[in-house]
Image (tube, rainbow, N blue to C red; front, side, top):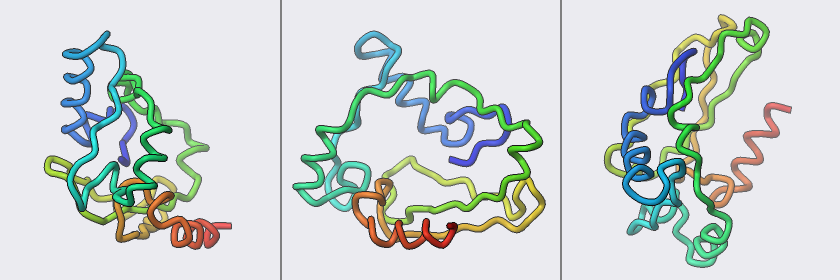
Length: 139
């Protein structure tokens, strides 16, 4: 998600409201349980290898619902001057997930830099070498 100042996760990705609703319907209302695994090619956040899914399942925990509701505060001039690079995971996308394009110009006035990896959300598990290579380009 690439929010603007004052936006919430729901503003950027409206399907996030379903997670807030899920938290309210099940349990105590302040946390979202880990999502279930979906059939391939979606898997668990894009992870489909059975061994990796088992490991990931052990790592997952509830997510506080407020992280989806609290507006991002991005109005600090010093922070806006920092160049940004976006790495988009462009593998299979579950229904209801839409990605708002990164603005063509960064807050610091330079062109946006967007790199893509052909995998799901958890690229650090599914494509660790390729992700590392991209991150090392920033060093």
